[in-house]
Length: 141
Image (tube, rainbow, N blue to C red; front, side, top):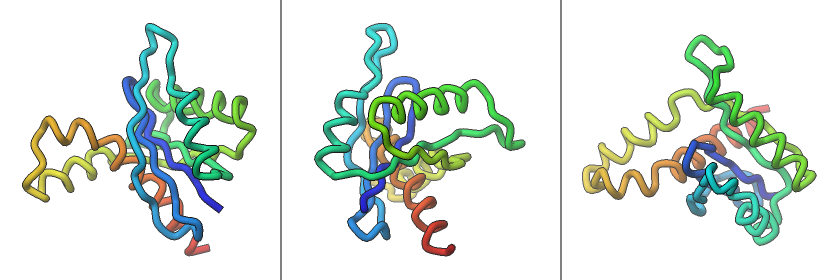
């Protein structure tokens, strides 16, 4: 059973999938979004869902630090609802406060990742962290 993890941003969607056992998350790719052209990456996500035989999707929910839902989280909720409508898969929303900041810090501490390279992989790494946090929570239940 594979689970897909998504970090939904305003210009890109970071994508990760679990291994077959649901133990570890691996980054797959970053899908481009172009709101002005009404392109939200759903076609590519559909291909990845089929390719990896995904059975559920975890969408990062960027809550405010006080736990409230702001405009960015509203967009993630809407995106998740559209995924559910298009692919008829269970959608799980995972609190993702600070994951992008953690991912950035990891890449900086690694030391050999330039700012330009970080921009290309940050959303995919954030998707891995969102999915791995979800998988870890499930294994602790």
